[in-house]
Image (cartoon, rainbow, N blue to C red; front, side, top):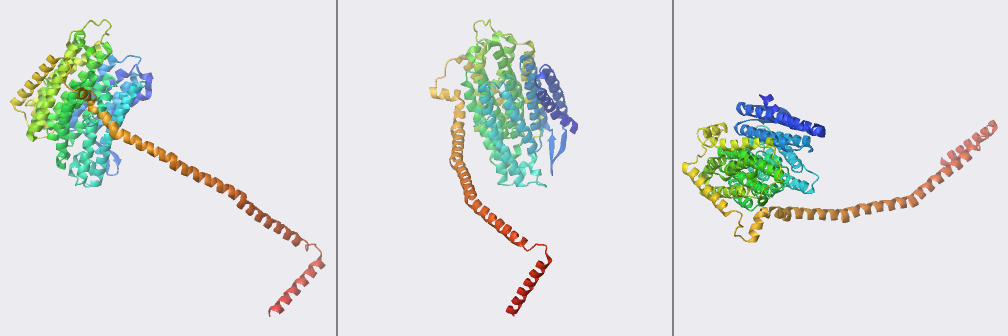
Length: 619
């Protein structure tokens, strides 16, 4: 059983590293190798989801490296590997032979492998390992076209923002270790044991986990990094921002639900942060004129529903939302990438009629957009109602906020559809979309329809049993009807409104178009003070420390010179005088040494005479 789990994580990690090491020499073989590895990983993930294996390996004294697959991690492992396979299928047809394909496919496999480690980790240290590699590879993938300074700057922004939030996991690990909950000093680092810590460590652990999860999932106030991440290739956006990196935070919150509940405040903070993100980032999505920016903001908003579900204890609904969102959003990003390649733009006004020129892509895009809008009988409509039932049980205000976010989902989805389906002039310069890049979109469109089934009994009850959760709230029929009716009205209103500007103040519209000014706020509140502190430290280093060191060195040099001129001369003179005196004494001592016996006898008589006189005088 453990071999199965080790193979699941080692196969993509090892293949990814191998492709990166070999480099451009493997460009031709890289797509085939990556697809074979992704398909094998999907088969292993499905097997692991049914068999629930676990694995251990020596790591630290009393803290082995532990991986495990249960209901939640099994569903996530299947979702991650399935989306990875589809995205790589699209990439194999989309990426030209002139690209550094070995580097791209190697990074994608390494990223997917690190996500699998994150999903299957049973302890905080192992989770941190996967978490860190995932962050590093996401930076490399977003900045894949590294010769473009704007892309590398965007990758840096995304990496630094998420890394700042990731410090929360180190806080949580330190607090868990300090709490000492469990039979050994390290057992408190088990994800299942975090909720057993005592105060104040419990609050520190909760705060660290929440901050890290919100940062990784681009929730308020960290959402702006996802806007920058859109500079990466579209397959990267499809993988990172549908089923892997941005949902890792939501997965962590769903995994640590008992911790949020035990803290007494974590569940409310998480639930309301998710609701606020669903509303505010939904408004941001509506204000966008760039398709990928609209999809990025909608990712933040849709993940907000998963975060809301984690806070409300609706684990089944949050998991269904995560899986359904993975299919819909990966399809939307891949379609946007196909249009970008064919038409050379991702601006909505320039995409007028794009769906008419590429009917299959347009139809698949429409299925995913309608699912995102929450229209029946598609997957996100039902999944959202399952999690909103948990919100209603917790608070009617929370349910109302969730419904408001769902209405906004319908508006920005209808807006995207309005542009791509409007009649437009002929496009003689449009490139043909490769057939190999189209049928993965069709597969995802079918998934958007098929994934509605798990949201209804009896499959929904089976999902709850697999997740090992009981007492999950079930939506009533009127909730399904209400959400569908409101979504239909909102979508119809948005379609009828078309491209007319909203009757809002220019400052309000620019604020939403600029992602609520979150990046500028981060610069004002964090970056600028940090840079000022760094400049002050540099000035202190130059003006105080450097001068002190230089002054000390100058004084040392002067002391050395004085020592050389004065002390050294005196010492040399003393040593010379002693040597001269010794030589003079030596000369005097040699004079009596003549070799004549009568002189030695006279010297002995003289010496004894002096000795006798001394003895007489002393007595």
